[in-house]
Length: 156
Image 1 (cartoon, helix red, strand yellow):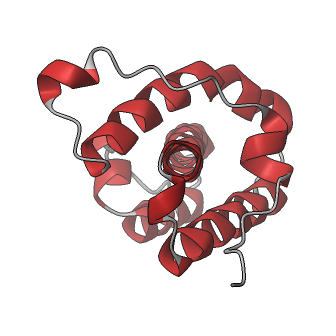
Image 2: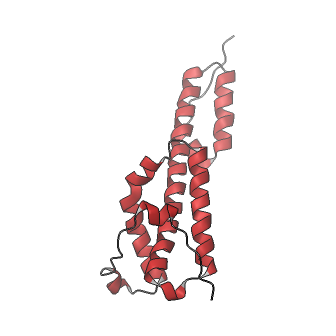
Image 3: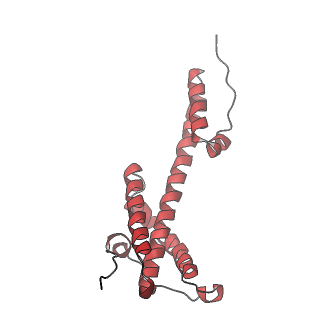
């Protein structure tokens, strides 16, 4: 007796819940519908990969934002900025370790778009008006400034 399965809207299911998607894939395997299970796995993989890339990009933007502010407003440096830079670097490192395709090459491929977003974010956080923000052009950041330089408060 052959089990019958229903077609699954994988795109919708994956966007709602990874757990439900895995359960649905398992159901397809139990019903011996390997083609449908493979389709579900492809959607799950693609969605998880997109999510990981978005998360990494968000941390790179956050990190760049604070490095820009550090360079542009030395008088306002704070322990909060130090922690944010440190924590963003740690999150990026962990994400790279967990997801090998999120390599240095991937970060370099998104560098310009991250810098553009970070420039806008830093400008707003620094209190630059929308009108003046168009003129705000911080010096482009280097890999060393973003990922290697040490950012510590000077002891008095």
